[in-house]
Length: 348
Picture 1: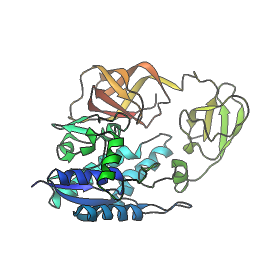
Picture 2: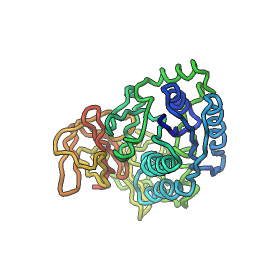
Picture 3: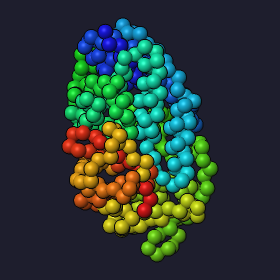
Picture 4: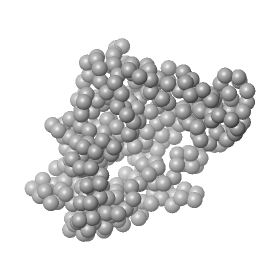
């Protein structure tokens, strides 16, 4: 019997994943990954509640349950990376790094060493012969977050929810009486629950006031408490008041200045040409030059784009400009249903 270690986060998706795999005849072991336990001012980390919920579901299902402690590695590989990227003025995605470094590396390696044949998670995605493919539920599809996973890892991974709509998942969890059937999906940063990125960063970086400057006129419009907290295209939190809304179109980390405009057609807000760095291709071979679909953010629309190469550097030319493509975020490349990989947007 194939032994599968299921990453159980205490949510409905991973709970149903474990239930379905048990019904399908796998020898299922539930595993809670203890990645982050630190409380923040005004926000209690939900890890203990999530662990308790995962345990309850494991008891309901009659499966063994383990806790894997990755907190030290997680701090180094995911949290420190994220903080450093923001300090450099970029906009990283910690969920993508978590999948690359923790769930489909540390967890996979630890599970196999502990006797598992495969792992499974509650991600909305599909795997076919080591290829990563989009989920049936287009709105919940999570391949954007999985593009940096290796083919070798995917060959050892099951994604049972990739074939279902989210509404079906809720219904099936309720039909099985799973403890987490009505639990709300987690929001916010992947490892600290409901807190926003600004509140989290404030714990680790100094708040240094600086000027908010009109890009066109050079006039100082107001003050901010740190350029690190602002990202391209941002509208809220500027507090410059009056008239048309302002949008962030740039920042200078050395001068600690944030540049804004009321012009929605400003050329800094729209990108047609993108250079990708730190590229990762799931089958370890770079795709041929040509037309593909790309996604610049989770749940963002798929856009047509032409991929070209200059040596090992990848370039994308979008058929239509994409708004607020910030350095540090990921763009993921698709060939129809198949996720090929992608890279991290570089500053132009």
